[in-house]
Length: 274
Image 1 (cartoon, rainbow, N blue to C red):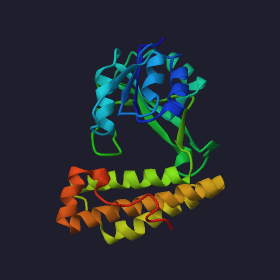
Image 2: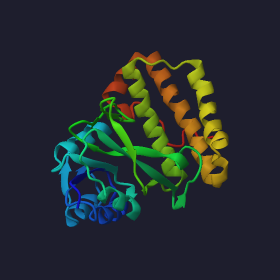
Image 3: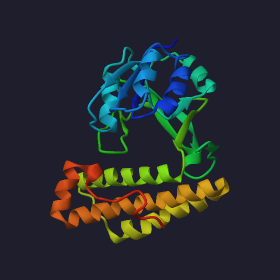
Image 4: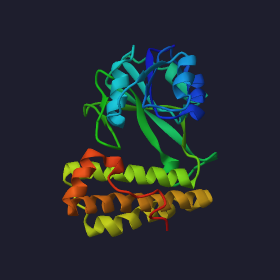
């Protein structure tokens, strides 16, 4: 086995976590699960499969990933979400690495699924991310959402063979609920950075994201799933700037937004259905 630690953040992932761990056991003897108060069997499944499980307070996606990285046995980190499963080709690719240069990071292709349907076009069909890195050089940023890797500019990026299979959403209802949740967190991130909700951002940006995903990136070839992905890209863009606009207009909402970003607005997942 290569000297790699796997770090997974979880929240009620009992349905998927076992499949991921089974594959990851072929790579490493060190799997760290940072759990956010799961109420299903996520923790039990993880512990039964030999993972080291830590139930930490939730300080954000990047912050909890960094907590797991600090607990790892090895400096080389494979950072995953619980709905991401490596395939055999990816594990072989990682097992063949020398991992002797801490200034190299490894970019992994993703294969996304809508329910059980693979998505081949649109934004989801061309997804890839750096997920394997050395913690002495790299860490996660810690905004409310859309964390990114912070690393020196001279890092060398090497692409790996194989895929992380990302089971993004089960159905339209789950997709819409996620869109609302992430839109709120994005609005908080923008509020903290002083970003403004201009008319262009409110009305033209959502349309641009829809057309890009559905037309330019051929999302229509994925059928109804491609339509839903493009539609939700429109909705997410509009919602995050709408929430930001409302928070900036109302000092009380702005205060609540900082104190409880997920609950700052009483919108249901279907409140803005089209």
